[in-house]
Amino acid sequence: MLPFSIELKPGLPVAEQILFAVKKAVVAGQLRPGDKFPSVRVLSQELRVNPNTAHKVIAALVNEGVLVTTPAVGSVVAERAMGDRQEKAELLGAELERVV
Image 1 (spheres, rainbow, N blue to C red):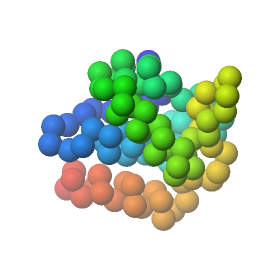
Image 2: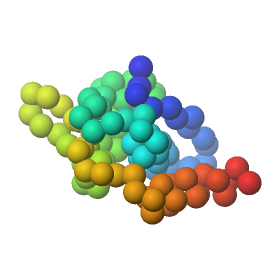
Image 3: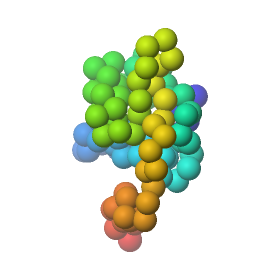
Image 4: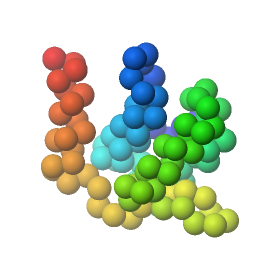
């Protein structure tokens, strides 16, 4: 089971949808600093996406500082304070626009 919720929609890049869902989960507090993040294999199996796409998502999250990857532990949510007002407004604003 994934620690975040996502409903993949056709027409949008899958990797971008997953990135958005993970960032939203971190900002909303579903994923807290230090929480273990699923491996590439688990992510690809649960979402039924290509393992290369899952790897691309995890690499992008590491590059953005959302995840930290360590040997023998795997990927965990970074300790940085993601979720200030500006980031929340940016992530949730786009979703509110779609809802309206």
